[in-house]
Amino acid sequence: MSEVMKQRQATYHLYTFLVSKMISSLGANVYSFGMSMFILSITGSALSFAANLIFSILPRIFLSPIAGILTDRLPRKAVVLVGQGGVILSITGLLAYSVFFDLSITAIYATTVFYTISSTFSSIAFSASISNLVDQERIQKAMSFNQISLSVSGIGGPIVGGMLFGFVSMEMFLLINIISYLIAFLLESTMNFRLYTKDRIENKNEESMIQSFKEGLGYLKTKPVISRLLLVVLWLNLFFTSVSVGTNFILVGVLKMEYSLIGFVEASGAIGMLLISVYFAARSNVKYPLLFSKRAVLGLSILVGTIAIPLIFKFSGSLLFVYFLVMMFLFGSLSVLTNTPIGIMMQKDVDENYRGRVFGILEMMAMGLMPIGSLVFGMLYDIVPAEIILIVCSVLLVTITLVLLPPSLIKSVYPELEVDNYVKSASVKNAEMLVKKELANEYRDDIEKQKQLSNPTTIRF
Image 1 (spheres, rainbow, N blue to C red):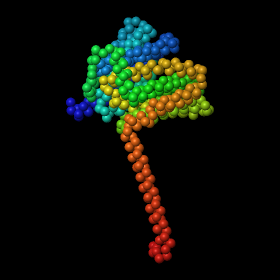
Image 2 (cartoon, rainbow, N blue to C red):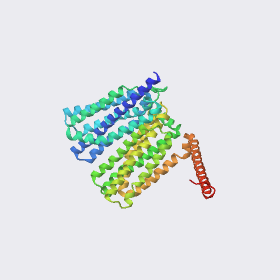
Image 3 (cartoon, helix red, strand yellow):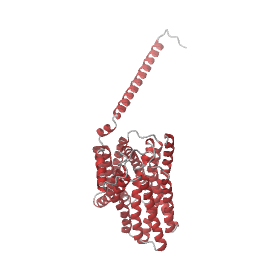
Image 4 (cartoon, rainbow, N blue to C red):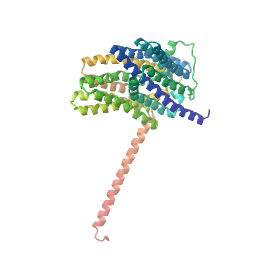
């Protein structure tokens, strides 16, 4: 295939990826919201709601490494399509059950498990395939499109889910979800997942799953920059649960903010994510992704501590609302500024033969830390003042980032950075010298004019 044809195919992939990912993400948020509302409406139990949440997390924790291994062994397109097909069959099974029997909590829990298993395989395989679908120059745009789809689904999911849950029957609700996933499945089936593939080793079936997993961990040891970056991301996910758990606790329990205003505060985070994702899709490629992400992580880390300010100083009601509106907007913005460059590095710097396992390991550890963090911080907020928790988390995050991503590591990855800094400093010095010369020349001209004016022999008009 000629390079021109590849470029056209990559452009098709780029926008097909955006549409299919947006449909899938929106469908997932709509389904999750609808099922949550249904469980609460028929049981009125927070425990039943929490159980469904657990069933949506545990399979992803345990199966992410297996999904990564199979992604590296099998054709990735097949893994994506089988995963999407599993999602469709899961919801179709629940629809069939609801037609012949009354919809039960047990059926919803079973569907949630199978749904999560299928989506885990599909999402990891898709994430590991982005650099095979588009050229290197447009990976940043693809990652930005991924963030756009997540932002749109985060904003629209609860709205669409609430409208459907309120105005249509549960059977119609499930049917609409099936149709949306079917559209995404058909779009993904038209994509060439080997467009920019390299010499990739598939079907290493003689190797056991455990050996393959160990090989993935061993590969990470050979990539110190990626390993450190993943550690920063994992610590970030752990300590950020202090924000996700603590924000509602602080706004409702401590600051007594109105529920209608809290909805606007939470929406501002998704709006920040959307705007910055659009910015990333439009701007030129980030020159130093690791340095860019480090600065964004430091910004996020400091932002965690700033949430404590209204708890220390007295704010009026309107100022409190505006403050948290800005804080959540900045959180959403900085999270995209952190995630997008990291995603670009993962796509470009991780070898294609190991990309599935690396994404699987990252998914397993990130998802595993969520319930741990929620449990730990949930207990801490009951016994420790919220401002102390947030300030300590902020200091720890800044320290971890500076230790794991020191300037020496940045310079080893980007040796040309020193040259750029030298050129910039030299150009600044040259500019300063030119300004000084111009000022000296103007001063000398002024002196000459003063001399001429003071000379009686000078002709004046």
